[in-house]
Length: 461
Ligand code: GBH
Image 1 (cartoon, helix red, strand yellow):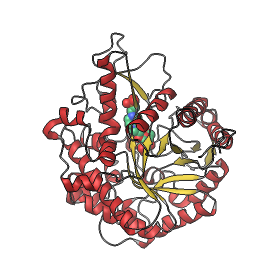
Image 2: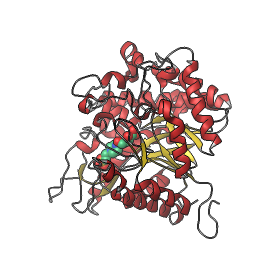
Image 3: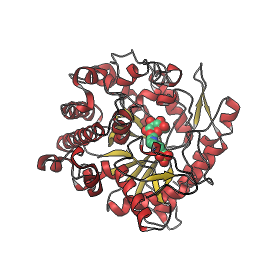
Image 4: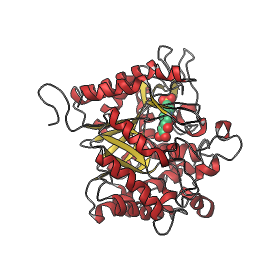
């Protein structure tokens, strides 16, 4: 039991999260090869201001400062990702000693400071060579490449790292990379997302198999993203629409790792475009997670037909992949929104945690990302990030209620993000950090939310 009789929590991971391409910089150092993002950033029109991650937060050099700030923040866990092209510059072959050395220094420093490392193996920075020469995630061969890369990491870091996440948000890789095309490789259509998703799941399964067979000890899971879909009305149609939307979202990538197959509603609606698992593949993916990661940011209403109030947001909420789902998404005018236009609805988070616990019984959940973008044009506004303070209080309260009152087995919470960073296609214009990273000199300055999060941790540890 993880509660004392006073209701405080023990054995809980309070952390922050980041990803390699978004914070590291040092893109040409230590033998790092190019990733698909290095290339994508150089295509005009893809990333705002044609920004890139060449320098980012310069954490490749400044990680000791980052760790010191985390220590001050009081977190006991840090989720970061490994840049695959630092370990294998082309995505294949021997491990690069400089890349291994960099992450060894980071891991050791975290441990010295009492911060438990959670490693994500893939947060979107695919080695460019795998894309250019081998078709990236479209080629089933990548499932073995990924497993081999994962194994190099288990061998190098597995003596000290006991919490592993294979993939970050395969939904984004599939839908944004191959559906709407806003992410690399920038392809569009309604078939490739399902093929790529299939390969991502098999890659995950193969990596997990190597982890378990290698006997490294510790646990391994996957971070799937999901935003909540609340039925607009109580009608059976709207409730079915909301359920369908969540199955197409979280279920797409979680049902296979728990049950060994895609949700039935996807099979019905996507038909022949949805790949079948062979018996062998099913055995590989089924049961391939020790825990479920959840990256959660927002909530929308779901309905069978467009709402009469005109608050329909069109197909955007599904990354442009709405036709198969036939769900209408809408907002409430009462909801406050972040600088990403994502709605701030803490109760949606609690409902989603309940949905997950109900569908995937017995699985522990880690909230591997949750956070909020605020408009912060200058240092002053960043230091008064009231909206983020309210967001954090609201969402952590909702999670704690899910844990304490609903009995959900949530074991950790990672605030996205430790610091402002390269926010993908938004360049440096969207800021989600607890720490401001001053443009130009990259000085780190805690925001008000840094201290609010510290208080939340202190009150609940
Ligand atoms: C995360 O993905 C990424 O993992 C991280 O790298 C990134 O920095 C962070 O987001 C911030 O952008 O209106 O209900 O449809 C977020 C995935 C998927 C979350 C789409 C918001 C839309 C909300 N996002 N979702 S909704």
